[in-house]
Amino acid sequence: MSTNWEIGVFASIDAGLGVKLEVVRELGIKTIQLHAPAKASRTPENAAAFTKKLKEYGIEITTVFLGFEGESYASIKITAETVGFVPKTTRAARLAEAFEISDFAKLLGVSAIGSHIGFVPHDKDSADYKDVIKTIQDLTAHLQKNGQTLHLETGQEDVDSLLTFIANVGADNLFINFDPANLILYGIGDPIGALKKVGKFVRGVHCKDATATAGTPGVDWGSEVPFGTGQVNAELFLRTLKEVGYAGALTIEREIPEEPARQKEEIGQAVKLINELKAKI
Image (cartoon, one colour):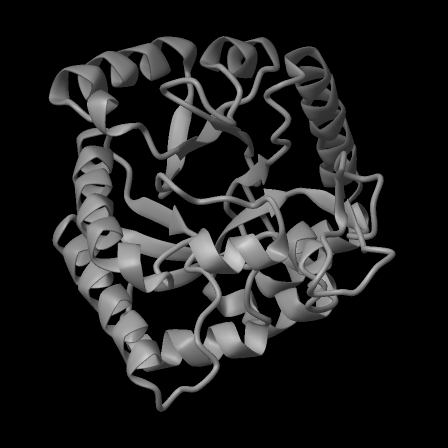
């Protein structure tokens, strides 16, 4: 089966978790997923300037990722309390901001929006669960007007729950950004088996790796490690992507902005490994 599997990396317009465009260019990477730009950066002028720089560097944005003030991954408990569209107190404001980010992504010519939804309420008959469903329905409807799809990132929910959620939303522009390491970090299952279950919905992936916690899975974090050095099994991951028919970008995620030299080195090592595996597979 032919596949393009262009290698990508996370980047940012403003200072953030992603690598700088100059580093992307130095590493010879041709696609990026973009962290949500801050509100002050979301102007037509900035969109035009950024698009011009991307064209000059020969780099394409595959996905713009949502991100919101107040989100924290300090612990799994705090993640549940602060991330995505699940926290009640910020839900409406974050939906409004997601509309704005979608509109900015349209200016950039990007047709995919990525997002962590958060820890979805388990009681599917609860008013809270139904409101989260309605929130994502409203978001996918706005994206539909902009010719965009929404890619929910794997992580907080096991894939069976995620598939149920997607079915309950019922939008035909709702898909998955598959991050195998997150299933290990959150202690919610085998990434390879999960990928086989959700393969038809996968429209983006992260090449990220992790080791499981020595503590209590689902309570204590596992550890993120360079791609190919953890428990994901990089070769089997790519082989399974081929098996499920995924032909999109392979986006490396290594978010250690406080150590830029190490970040660049480990992303470079991931590029080398992925190219070796692509040649082998």
